[in-house]
Length: 246
Image 1 (tube, helix red, strand yellow):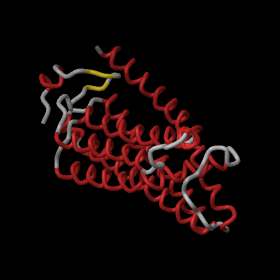
Image 2 (cartoon, one colour):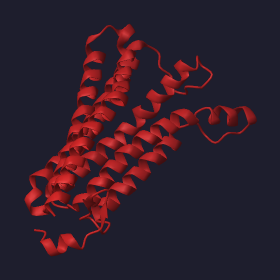
Image 3 (cartoon, one colour):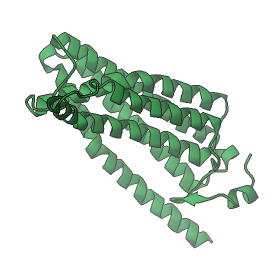
Image 4 (cartoon, helix red, strand yellow):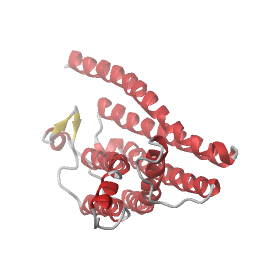
């Protein structure tokens, strides 16, 4: 249980008091696992180039690597933010983080392949795709694996934030911190909705159209800013009310 005196001594970032000031063993394990996953992205690429042509082909894989790296970085940063804000290392937090790490280490393989296929298709083959896919059925199975991994990772992150919300009294969360926690949960729910929708499309529509399920994720670029704007307005109201009461 956090006392008022202990909370007053905490560092504050973006209006949120950071209860996880020290790097825990759980967070260190997560950082190491993400570093290993990023290594997989490189190792899963081609072997060391032995000619100029091989080097140019390796460079052309950079967009797929960059997109995969960015998505993995977003997942890592979301967990870092959770760790810093709440500083939890109990049994449920450990289980959820372990599930996140396990899923992420598996998810990284179809992630790189999916982005490789997409960039090769969009560039009409100029950007190479080193993965051999012989049929649309194989491509659909690949999309199913990608969507399942995305859904499970977002479910783990949502579970971590939901767990922090259940411990709001113990953590001493103020109204702004409660709002930020709910915003993080809603953002995960939105991603879950998109991921489940994409998975259903892949599983239901004819094979010729199943790759288009990936465009569902483009909706996140529209829905996330709208969600952030909604919570930002409510957050400003809470801060103004707190200043007025003081």
